Image 1 (tube, one colour):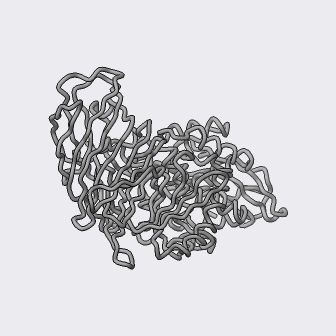
Image 2: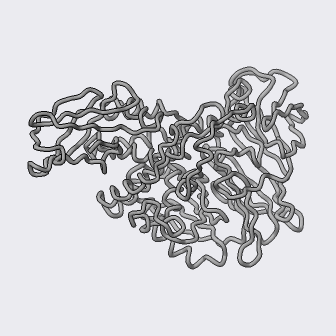
Image 3: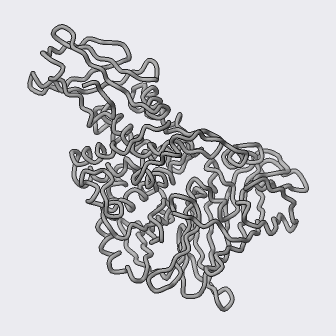
Length: 542
């Protein structure tokens, strides 16, 4: 959700006008060289202590992996400001070489294909502190109103290796989940992903809180949340709903969460399928920053307000009917956490579908017309500054338009399909087909082409790879009119609906291409033609 928050408040002129220069650090983080592809992570077991006063971490991560190709070297990742204390394999201390944030670990013997291995990666240090989380990655060390520590972390885009050793790539999630064990000073609680297992004294001053994740999990969503929390439990249809909030906010949290969470969960499960991390439960965890889609432990910091910190990002009033952070970040449980992009260059797969889930929720609650008002209100936030798809292999996201423009692309395809029953069936099948899978844009295009029975390739490419949206040109021709698309993508074809007002507001579907075509409907003047731009995200000369 990181960039969505930025573009909703101001335009990043510098970022949008400055050419991107990629470095070796970028390619080490985003690339897929042999040392990354030769192994498949099976599980993470993180065991650390966090000192709020020193703002430090010390501990280890047990990384269990399957050898995909014989190798004597693998790449793990840990930000270079953090110290590698040692890396141990079968009681043998391994040698390693650091290259920026990459840690190339060498084994004394070649690891055989299909064997399962485990290294224990000991580390320590002071992790990067975010200047303005979640817009930049890092830890947040704050205090609650009673002066007690209030700590959390958000690292989307920046990378999970900011605070723990990991294979820092979206291409590989631990197949058999993870455990997160975090020791914090007595009187505080740590809340992480998955199910709470137990708490245990560590010396006289610390308590360790143990959490277990059953499902594969994207490394950037593994999290810690430390505070004097109160636990609130609820459920819907046997799905556990757990809320961890500051002690002072207990009463307001109960009423506020109840208003949105159950209707949202009912809506999303109807439209997108069963909550994908049922075994791990669903949690909202209060954080000292606005929010983040941490799997099964959604970060919440919207201060118990409707809208986005009390504002409606759509400008329509519809956005004030729900808590934006609850709806958007929970939408990521399906799109981002369950259906995950291989490379962050394809992050529109996370953000476009999740932004669209806001509109889906409004339609569940208030109907189609309210949903259309909301999503079309979002169009004013589209910048058309650069392509939605970023550069691959260098840890580079595309334009912030991946949010609103991505959602409006889906709304456009819905109306191209022109059959709501079919549309909802396709969306549900998409979510279920790629549940807990890692995919790319071509996979999305192939799926929608097959399920709609249409070739939408040019449509996806125009919206995702170019800064302009399709322009429909209409001109008078004798007693009727002519029409065509103007696009960068050649051989562009997309049907479009118009209303001819002079003959009783008759809706007409035009199967427009890049070539001028003649309509069969009579019109006296092009002023009598209304293009349904609330159904299709396009421009027109009318």
